[in-house]
Length: 213
Length: 309
Image 1 (cartoon, rainbow over the protein chains, first blue to last red):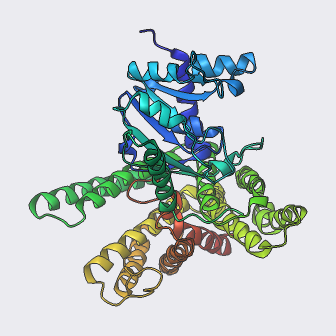
Image 2: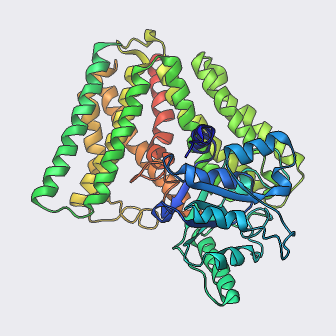
Image 3: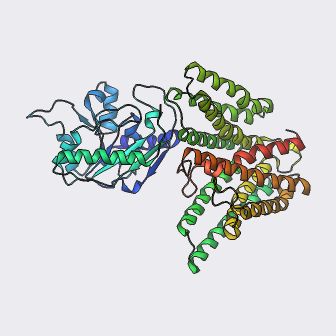
């Protein structure tokens, strides 16, 4: 398999950037999956979420990591689409186009079958800073196609301060990351989604953060 | 590089490797409690001493970049942990901006600007910037927190840089570098001496609601050991006679203790144990620099009082 050199370079640069200008305090880094297939699910407050999550993986594993991101948003201009598809190697996701003939998650499922590690934001889009919005059903569908793949929940706190949605000015703040135990798909889809929501709530309360008002 | 400075660094490395070996062998023959914890801490000391050696060995201009970067990390830790208002999100940028400027004053040894820039100009600028957002609720609290952060992590720590830049006419053979070595070594030595005497003889808690593990025995043991160490090394690194060595040694011991417990009180208020996890076993940058935030300005003005700037 060809090695994507630009992804390595990008990862080195972003690792340095994250170390200097953000700084990450990770609880239980050992639970971050080392090999695929695996899904990392995280809350989504900032564009920085993806590069911070990618920085948690060692360079030797970075070729396995594929963030799942909105096609609508990231493929809108040529530079962004080159950066996201060729360098970061996102899996573009087409929202709201599911039909009998088209499964928006098929590319993600293929990647899992090739032992990749997916980064998935089950909230769908970036929410209000430092708040978790309702999880969408996408993660349930994805998990139902690959019930044996471990799903590692990751709660990120702080990036909604560093660069929240709709803001252009970056302000350096540390971010806190809480990694949970891997979970697996459950036949009862409702219970599974509730379980995942509950897990995120528990990870979020672990840090005893002040409300940001 | 003055040969005394070189020898002092070599001595620090020898002390480090001897303690490393001591801990290793103590554990081999008699299991130590919390061995893993102590081992991780000692390993981190290796990198800390390495960075410190770089500051001492490097050209002064490069050393100032490193010190400014340490200030930046310390301020970032502080501002990330303290409660702040959503409307103030961008205000820390101004505080961040003051870091290179403050270290620049140190690098060109503009003493007058160096001592007023943060307590006078940034004091007013940040307050005014915060007024512009017109959020009065929690204003005093927010502005107080930001000023405190700037004073400890930037103003106080930048005295390390100015100390380094002190001209050699301050009649010390080793110049500012000697003073910096003296201050940093004694401050860290005081922390360790307090820890060890406290662990060994500690009975009476000194400030139980702030640091339950700190004792009178540890505090006094640290003071005695640090003052003794000051008397021992002052002839090599400073122009101090024995009276000034005694005075500066006890000043560093007292201020070091005060700085340490002050950061502990802040951490208790915020509700965290460590400022971050950047230094394994120690916590954050500020957890290691806490004593220095008090000793650096105290010692700097001690030197200035006797020798001018």
